[in-house]
Length: 439
Image 1 (cartoon, one colour):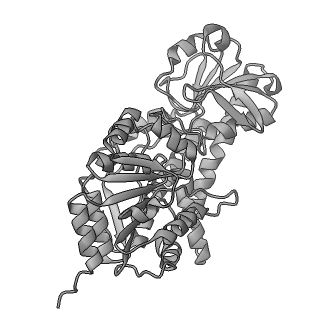
Image 2 (cartoon, rainbow, N blue to C red):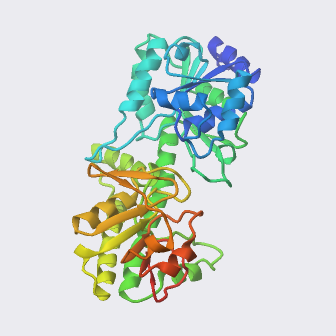
Image 3 (cartoon, one colour):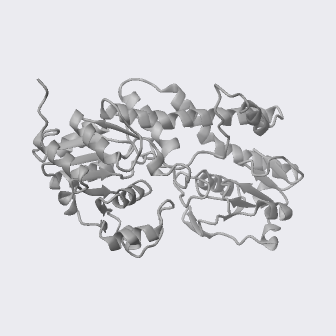
């Protein structure tokens, strides 16, 4: 005999199909805000909940703070009455679907910090009612949904699948990627129950063409970690190749271009000054931490993390050696860092290798300045620094310029004309020359 569908499932399914379901996005950052906009544009009413009042005020003033969201779109949705940004938790009770998109950073001792997930879960539990679908999108270690969120939600006295529904669906946002915006990236969904998965699939299929369902939240959580671990390991591999090629006076960039000609069995990755952002340098360590709790050591993940963490130090060593070859003492050198965000054309400093490189230069006694079209000010070691203006006079004052982030709006040829020495970690210049040395 077929299993009877829970009444709460039938009612919520009907609301989702008719776009009568109200949705609350918890966390209006680079994951939550684009999701809120995408759902609102499809006709769903969306509450945008954030504990940061400045985010709410900036949205209401139509100010951009997320690169992938046009403030004019937000303003239009506000005027149409399809989007309501708020700091009031009471709207958690009014929503039929709650999607949690909060940060999950690592503590300094490389232990996952899921305090934001816990706080969000407790707030939801206080307002939880029958007929709600809860979806966690924040990246975390396997079993977070089942062993962290579920027990907190059950404190409400309600039962999963009978009264409410719980899923994990990992975010896959790639900031500033115009080729693959949120709506063009396939969605993975793993529910605690079949009905939870089906409801989440129904919702996401309204904004995303391809939805892939897995058997459990753990499978979905682990899939996200596999995606980013794949990149972590391959970037570490190419970084190590770069170190070896430099020792042998071989051009790593030429080697990669040659290897790329193979039409199968190879995917190009590129070396760089270190890893930044939330995903690649951090997410695989969630799995490493969880594995250690189970008595297993993830040797490849740990080694890859070690190699990538070494790159800022390697950049410092290369620059020091280049200056020494030109007769410039590092303690008297004036160095300009070109680009300090973790990623090209994105205003985001999270885990940026540029910050560590600046600190390393400063510790060795060099005088360091920076330029980044997205970042006018930096605070490092308690010291406020203002970005310089790029002009022939200022460029001529530096002993070395180091390309860390290759922003599109920068005139690199103009910089080259006036630079005494450039260390290029991003292959901007494509070949070495009299005043350019590449990683």
